[in-house]
Length: 77
Image (cartoon, rainbow, N blue to C red):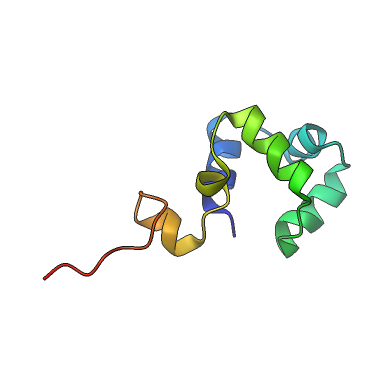
C-alpha cells in the first residue's frame, strides 16, 4: 500500500520512527497507519510538505503508481 510514499521513505533512508516523527506520532502508531491506510488529512499534508510531492503522487494506488503517471492507463489501440 502507498508504493510512492514507501519509495520516498526508502530513497531518503528514513526509519519508521522518522516517518512517525514527520506526522507527529510514535513509530508503532505509524506502522499501524501504514498497514491500515488510516492517515488523517493533516498527516497526509505533512508527508506532502516533507517530501515536496503532491497528494496524488504519494498516495496513488498500486496500479496508479505502477504506470508512472499517477493516472489510470488509457486504452490505446
